[in-house]
Structure formats: C-alpha cells, structure tokens
Length: 333
Ligand code: BDR
Ligand code: CA
Image (tube, rainbow, N blue to C red; front, side):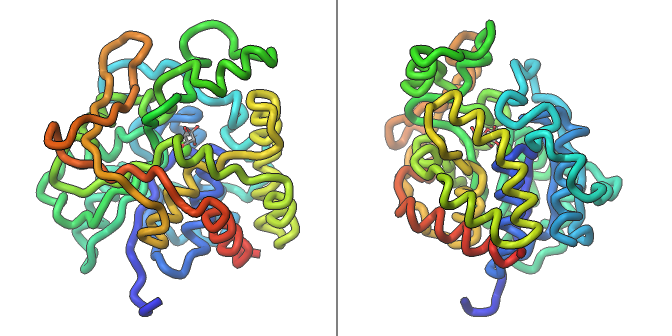
C-alpha cells in the first residue's frame, strides 16, 4: 500500500451479505468510507437505513455520514422483498441485538452522494450492493459530477441463472426437487437487477462512468462454509455479532441449496473496490430486460460494439477472495 486510500461510498440495502460488506469496507485500510447511503431492496427502506445505522454503531463508526435514498423503484413496483433470506428485519432476526442505530444526517442519498463527490480531491469509487435506483438518480440529477466518480462497482446481475424464482408468484420451493430446479436457475434475473430493472438499464448502458458488474455467476462460486463462519465468530465481539446475523441466512442456504455455506455476494464487490483487480473481468455491453414478462430484470451479455462495455467479473481466485474478506473482518475484533 502506498498510503493513499481510495474514497468509497457504499450504497446498500442491509441485508445479511450487505452487513458483511459494510463491515469489510470499514475494516479495510485501503479505502476510506466517505458515506453509506441506503435503498429499498431486501427489506423496506426504513429497515435498511436503521440496519446500516446499527452496523456503523457496532463498528463505532457513527461518524460516517448516513443518508436514506429511494424507497421504491423508478418505474414499476418492486415484485418482492428477500425476507426469506435475510429475515423480516433484514439482519436475520438479530437487528435488535445490535447497538442502537447511528442516525441518518437528514440529507437524501443523492444529496449526500453529490456532496461527497464535490468535496473529494480524488475520484470516488461508488459501491452499490443493492438495487441501482440511487445511482441512476444521481447520474440523472447530477450529470456534471460523473467525472468525479472513479468507477462504479455493482454487485448484481447474472449472465447465467438468476435467483428470483421465488418472486414469480406462489410460495418459494421447499422440496429437494424444487431446490434442484432453483439451483439450475428457475428464475433468470438476479435480485438487485430485478428490484429496479429501469435503474439497472440507466447505469449499465451509460458511457460516462466505468462500471464493474459483480454478478451471481461469480459470487455463487465463493461460498463461505462452516470453517469460515466459525473463524469469524471466534474473532471478537463485533465479528461474533456478525456471525450471529449470518445464522438465519445460513439456514436459508441449507434449505434452498442443500449446502452448509453462504454466498457473501456483496462483500465480493466491496473486496474488488478495496483491492482493484482481485476479480478478473471480461468487457461486455449489458442489456437489461425492462419488460413486465417473466424475464424482467435479466441482464444479458451483448455483442461487442452494441453499447458501452461493462467490466463483468466472471473469475477470481475464490479461496483468496474469502481469505482476504475474513482477514480484514478479523481486524474489527
Ligand atoms: C443480492 O441480492 C440481495 O439479496 C443481496 O443482498 C445481494 O445484494 C444477491 O443477488
Ligand atoms: Ca444487497
């Protein structure tokens, strides 16, 4: 490290893996977390904001500015929350066990993002790890600030199977047969893209700011298993609190996928912002299905030249990814 930190903003919908990601960012000396902004997604906005505030308080970083953003998608209603995975409180039933939330500072997410960009003497990395609504609004309201964004690293999308088949109607699959179907891709859209496809289209098809997309194709290849979770739980009281937050999510993975391991999707994207180049990318224009049919929210790799290239992270040393995340979290104690 050369002593110069990268300023970053986390835009988030905590969310269990968001919790891992936020704590990873705070624990990483390579970056300076300039702000946390919140968006609807896994649960409603009031809960995601309160959860982000609790995580900042847990890390004794109530000094990090926090602002609430979009409560709903740009155009069409959200089709479903992800409480089945993250618990109705968004933190696996453990939100109330965390410290009282740091308060949002009264600005909207777009206002806070704009203030951070204006004030920074270096390009800022934006790390959205939920629906892209706030980022689409920022680019629309403040096009003059696009040049101040170094890059956007987004956890979302998928070039293969999605993870939203529970949102097409009816109860989520419970049987082994249904779970197998899910694993093979019963839905085509990834959750963050599915929450606000129009916002994803806005961000992924613009040419003003470089975008790295960290899709399910890669994040599902980085499952944190029992040893990783046990090591986290043993690392100190903050990490133990995070491990407790993961418990419900772990049970959901066991039930849905039949594995004792969790995908820490959002933390993989934050790691790429912390250690640029950790993930290996392929440049591809991405189209987002914005119709109201069953493919709504699907992210499709398009031929070269058909749009601005998005750096799609499709490969990494997955053992190293998990080890780097754990090593940094341990510093929080
Ligand atoms: C994404 O969806 C959310 O449930 C997670 O927090 C993550 O951002 C994975 O598809
Ligand atoms: Ca998320």
